[in-house]
Image (cartoon, rainbow, N blue to C red; front, side, top):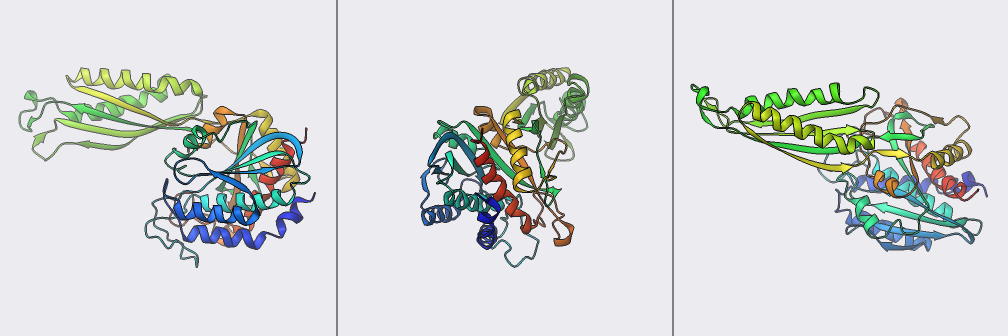
Length: 388
């Protein structure tokens, strides 16, 4: 069973498919045409599928003809509300919407891997499930697929995210925390408005908001272990109605990022104390609203070992590198909470073809020649998961 030969015959198919998805992006939860195309391709190959997750999610199954365990491979499919600025011939045809995070690559490489694995199913051990997941960017898709049984009977899971900071031809893989939890918060402040010339008669919500922003920064610097990276960012401040009125109301919005499950519990508790007591100091009221969006993505040791071995076989002996943890969030973490899993960051960066822009940039592009590596890695992991 030669995976490279099997994958090579689908190289043109991979690129054509990726460019089609790139030109026709759809936002989270509304991937209707994308979903239709995936279903049509699966039908063409004779691969069974069922709806799974929100309105557009798909769970396909390839049953090997030899006994073995079940592994789930994930590819997300939603785009971003970003205006494309690449001027590529297959640039987005939808104004203000772009595959600026590489999910078009994930769909096309997983579909191509499905063809490869389906061709080899006579020699394949166990079962491969293919999760074409909607709404990763809003962190709704993985949860919905799990609620709809995507992980029932699954023994392990594996995902790939193309990554602009990793050179083409290499893949970042390591055990332990790899991507951060991403939580969102808002803080509503109530003071007492009045004339700007008589602040002593008022409780200035703008001052309270400023003090809360400052005091929140002490959480990371003074309450979190320095060896446990964490971020607390207030990204939006709103207070006041005009120049000569003391603000009665204020609102702060922001995010926290961290890698440990300990902080998953502690962050809202620490913030609640700082927010409430700071507001009380100024005779104001403040309410913290804290939403957990995605947990940290923590690679399982054994699954990571399988993936590293697969990458060395399928791509090259020196393909695997280790990079620092990423403070971006990834809802594949929900799958990894339920079953042993790993996520790999596949290199698509290459100055020669202008693939130098970061994820979420309107100028984002990838080295398409490197996408076959994702196909090979998906397929090899599925094979090797049952090799033991």
